[in-house]
Image (cartoon, rainbow, N blue to C red):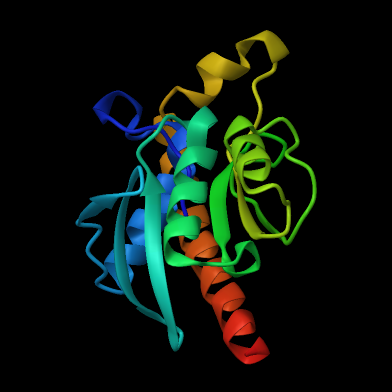
Length: 176
């Protein structure tokens, strides 16, 4: 599940890093995100030998938990089999980190998921988008597009994040 905000206004913003990563993942594995249900846009396919459902919540970022709870409940998917991809201002642009549980570090989409699911036990791919110099500018910063000189680095981090998802899926497949 890639987090972001729906609509063209937010399409290429830092806050939509999760959407951009799962769009690339879905394209790589020819998974059409053509279904619209559970407050999500999603598609089914196979990645690394695992049957997957790639989803993008169609709620705004801060309400991502509504989508996560709806799709997991309807399809009886346990949270520990979920990978959430999202933007992380505490990581510099060009860095990603994997995590399997823990706090939300102020990321409201993640907070919404933890609160809605009642657990923090799910996989996360944190995509670094950097932090503005002035803490008061965080909202404007994450809702802004990448600067021209950042685009090449961000494209590289998208590929790294897709790779991190593939590794996590392989680890999940090997556990079963």
